[in-house]
Length: 524
Image (cartoon, rainbow, N blue to C red; front, side):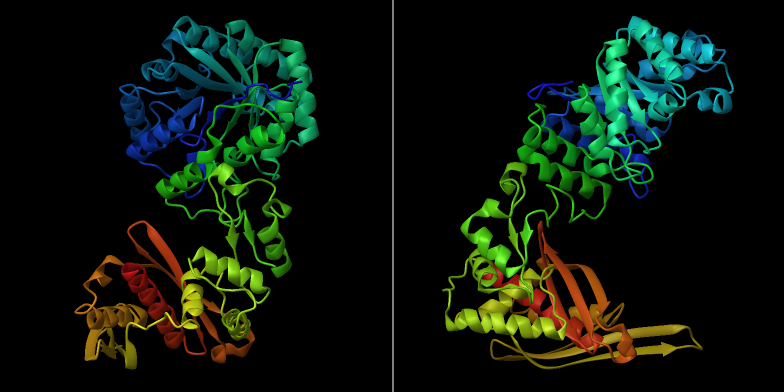
């Protein structure tokens, strides 16, 4: 069993096993960028892919061989030699050497079912395939990590056979034996027992590779460490086939902050790493992810917020900044004055507890929530709500009217959407018309035309997301609609909301808030 303070090596397979997840893909340049970020973070091993399997992986290894890595060792991934083939003549094994990586990780079969039914070979030949491949890679100067595929299923089926496959890798000179829960069906107590049995029997460094099919991949990895494993394989954000792999962004802080183990990852950069990988993979970030999610340290209930305001750790298990995250105070119909005051302070607004303004803002908030407004993803709208209750707020324009038209000609297969807006801006009447792909796009274009002569900076912002939610579907077409708009300018993003029983009106309200928030920030 590992003692607390023991060093656990971190092995990242985001660029190989992670890309087997649905919706996850990286270009060869993206893979290099991710690898550099992982290296900066302190990852011990970075698995780059399977040499020769596709042009992206070939390009990655060619570029990786030219670079200097500060901390991490790059690993190529493959399999044992083929049955009935001399290892020296196996083209796939040769490609592992051609990748010029200091580390080679390869997998072999631990489960007798796979040996006889999938590989259709003998137990003896399977062990020879493992032993020969290990020895050949070692003879060529590589650090060798043996991934024992389906180890836990194989051990349950036939412990003696599963251990014999590991012994073959040890006999070949493997540096690590990694126990893989390839089907993701093992439980933490089973993983702990089997890890302990392997270490007791074979006595060389052991790693753990888990999948999340039962939702316990991280728990299984930590159980294995408690039983003596000194390497964890996983992916950033838990990317991986089916339901994913062990999530390193959860496992790493648990190891060091909760269990007392050491590793080389810079936990203060954890949230940045998580977002960086999501951005390059073009995946939405999991707001509810432990440690790194945007809601990980978010507080909504009034009593909770009041407690956090007095003693932060009363409702926070760690200090958010220790993992690069931050505390967030949410506002809703559950809010009390503490939520309003802390939110105002976050916006840089001085608001006194018990003041008429604070009471009015809270009352207004609860009324708007009753109407269907929701400000958790629309903090820009909430900041404007606060400022509208204060004497410092001044609107950037006054609306006279807006109008949208949509025309569809079924005979000519032709459609068109246009919008007009009439505003008063700096005592100047502005009347503009614009076309768009839809009513909101047309309204946005017309509004920009009207504002551009007065605020040319309007071209710096753009709408990046648009969501519509029917609040009470039982009312049918008369139901109220909530529109959430996300906007961005450079790296800054903000959210706004509008609600109405008319989708155009709801969209206009969210759109105006977005524009006003941007102009307010630009002029502050």
